[in-house]
Length: 492
View 1 (cartoon, rainbow, N blue to C red):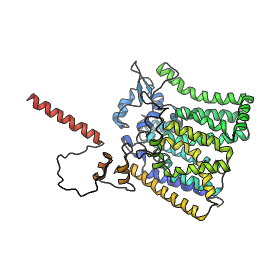
View 2: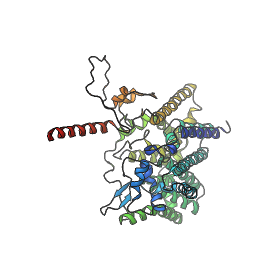
View 3: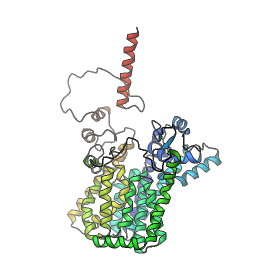
């Protein structure tokens, strides 16, 4: 078992690569392409600044949308009172994308291809770049876990993190979403927090500030990442006071951390100042948080998008935190505190299901920290009785099977997983299925299931769903046609 964690890491890579080629978004068209929907919004900064030189009006967007159909509408930009635009999504992801964007842009220029920011070379390079970030994150996560846990516990944790959770989908298929990028960024924040508290230097303080700043301008709620470097190795009140005294005494390092965070955060502030006239701007319009009424029950347990329903493997963090507290107390407080605050923030968002996604995508980046309680539990199970080992193995095998089935359901041609409309009846109707028929689909519209024998069934109307048309679209179309027919009769 000497190199078990490396073998597990390599196996995880193979699994991710397999799913990359199972559903290669870089070869997909329209809204299934790598650069589509929210990813297009995060990415728009790059073509707007470096290709079209248009950050105020985004005139290129209409033509690109007609050509590539990367989303149903032009929602990536927010119209201001003076009819100019500012980006809806923050700029951080574009910083991650930028090296691979420039490679694709130079390639298109040299080859005479469409250097428009959305052609095939851009799709391919962005996918490759985000796959690279996933590998980088897992590589350094292995190095971190080996500092605290055995080879075996580390290897099993890495393998299950990939195979038994929706991290697989967001590192292999939807890897250009911010969650994959932030997962790796969190790994680096943890890595340099460990190094800083072992041997504090000005360089590491500055790097930590830069990383925390980058996380914040990728998703503003990730500002809570500052708890990691601030509280790492804090075990209680006395060590907390000592930590505060340390940062006050080593004020130069503290100022370097703040400077690093502000330096990279100022990129977003300057952009807002240029486009809106203000250094601070809320670009999500009517979308907001319900701080006093977080959607915790729905976010964790609902059939629509409950975290523990779609990623049951993560239930193990509950006993895992107990063993983390007992065996690795210096890292318990920052990981536990971060997890509690993160869950509260994530499910305070009014769109708590986070649109079309596989499970709770908003939690994926936190798996970098949640790997600690998982590893702590696994290390304990390895020295436990056979019955506990067997139970863990059976549960893990089920979670791997279930996660892979969900990943297939989310991306196969039958559209089994309806990420916006799931309910209890439809969930159990399609559970474990890779192919369904229209008889199954009707349970999206009702939570009731008829179990008797159907008699006297008659068709009262028959129509086809058009390409990319939802049931709601169909109803609206039929109502409009009925209105036109009535108007036509009235005119006659």
